[in-house]
Image (cartoon, rainbow, N blue to C red; front, top):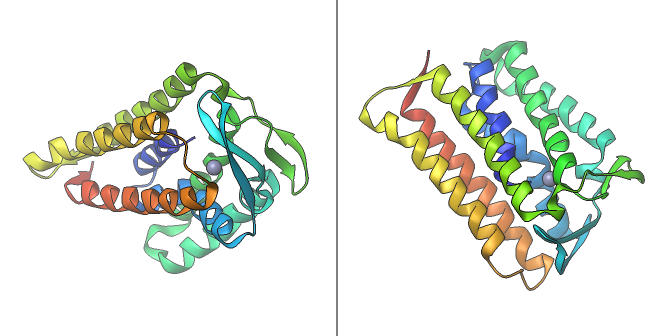
Length: 218
Ligand SMILES: [Zn+2]
């Protein structure tokens, strides 16, 4: 899953006003940030198999440290403690929302991934496989993002005219990246793809920071 992950991030902002939107954008993708780093460094493995699934060219056969359920619980706990320490102003409630945002990644991935998500580090493998349908996987991703948008728009108000259009610019940017992801030819290999994925997560966190500056919590 790609842009669908940002649905829970936008919902998180409605639940915790003291948490910055870009922190939530990073939290929901933190395991994919580390996935990209682990792929680049060989700690985890994947390969590009064009047409592997209708909506994904990636055979994600070894990612125990970023995409197992047991590792997700560790990432959530680490995120909880880290956020409580670096941003005490957000309180425990803010830290809990960050931890839940981190955990949302595994649940939303579970819907689209084929059986490549381990429960423990070495299995059993689970995944509902919605990526086998290009249409329905995109419907799921965009719907989740739209629900997040509704939560965000209802829980914040624009500081100026810019604040009215900024969330829609962010939404459009996300849709363009999602469409590019699906339409672009498969990458040559996974080592070419991982740094691009990493760059897109960081870019989107930056875009979320800019968007959030134009709005204020209600
Ligand atoms: Zn993932």
